Amino acid sequence: MVAQNIGFAIIAIIMVIGALRVVTTSNVVHAALWLVVVLAGAAAQYILLAAEFVAITQVLVYIGAVMVLFLFGTMLTRSRIGRDSGLNNSYAKLGIPVAVVLFVAMALALSKSFGTEKLPSDGSLVTTQQISDQIFGPYLLPFWALSFVLLAAVIGAIVLARKD
Amino acid sequence: MLVNQFLFLAALLFCIGVYGVIARKNAVLVLMSIELILNAVNLNFVAFALRNGNADGHTFALYIIAIAAAEVGVGLGLVLLIFRNRRTISLDDLSEMKG
Image (cartoon, rainbow over all chains, first blue to last red; front, side, top):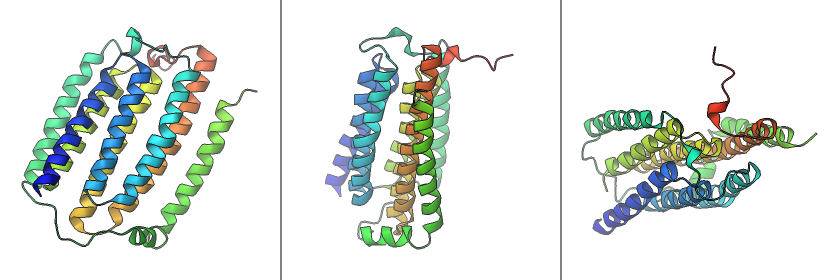
């Protein structure tokens, strides 16, 4: 129990530092690499939450595919590699009070509704077989919709990005 | 482990992502901030799946990952198109909708 909490704390601190660097760094490539740290930390938290299939999917899809897309996007739009002072809006300071107020509101709501409720430590673990039974059982219709969304996204991206 | 420690981490990531969407001007960085927000949501889903002891949260988290991948693909396609037409991806320069 204690070891889990220590692991959680270390990963959480790394994730928060990484997320802050993503939104504050003045280098687009560094932002993408800090995003890798946050996504890998999220995968580690999923393992801590006994969701190994989601964790592996996170690594494959996010760190494998989405990050490559981001780096390609950075490269193809010829964002300046290296420091770039023009990455923030003129009203960037406005974001700080918005984020702080949002966090305070959510923190109040969370501590009021969940307090010190513990996660079950001896509950039955969710197996990958159960997830597939869910996807191909009660959630089959969203799965079909998702397939069409992915197909439309692939075709749309090709149509948008090709040169005529 | 408390339920709240995961929910607080997710809330913090969500707020950092919201700050990024507001503060950033580069379109690629705005998409990265949106990824932060989607990851915060996923963390909540998986935490609640463990709390409730069923696989619904895992299923939703997987669907969100797939939607996020599609969103990044189309989003970067749009950014590339904007860059090709304007030679810039600064969101402040796309101000035609302003009266």
